[in-house]
Image (cartoon, rainbow, N blue to C red; front, side, top):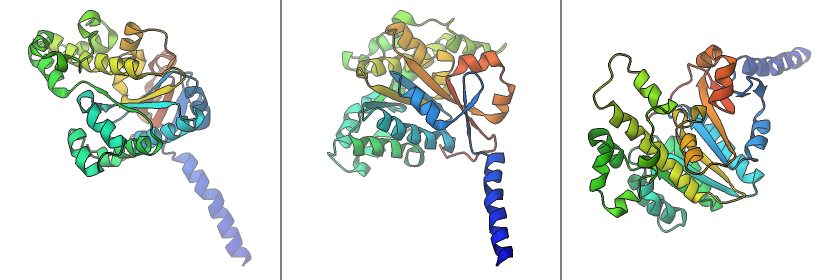
Length: 293
């Protein structure tokens, strides 16, 4: 019996040690200091807007998005608004009707999530949490057909659209777009010596997504609430993308960001880069299995 007890105690000590040596994720702040999830959540709850920069195919990103959503809902006593890059604002009416319980999920989801095959595994839980707790969920992104029009024909192509269609596109796009802004200049730099003739269209097409998401986030924000937005990390890293547009259109919000980073990339980052990219980092193993997209 004594040997059995000793074996059990050894296992009890060994298993947590294994977990510590091979963590599924670690959280760091912008100073590069490892921090606890609850500490991060406490700080996020003080802000106006939180941007969770995910890797679209990383299961830890999606799990933590749900954890942060549930945590902020409790911290803010329900004063929470959700929004996502994965939903185009042209589907807002259908999404609202579903959240209000007008019809069953299988009548709505094929229409709203047709471009995201990983909805069921990665985003459904967020929508269901919003539905169960009567939280507004904002479809913030530009319809892809309009971003595609810009990609092919430049921003002038949008002049052909009806007033109803134009309301689905951030109206500040033409006024503020600047190809020298870091988020868009880097797109060109990454081409090296192979910059395509339509590079400006590519940059504006990307900006149309950021500007539109910023527009609908601002329009949907309510005072003394936290707006939690889910998006690819490149849409909010370095206070660029969506955050740049929000600060340009209507400065003054207290904004915080989370980004997802592979462990190998984290190890290469210097102090300045860590300070600039995000407020919090979710560092995940490079060999983490990927969800299907």
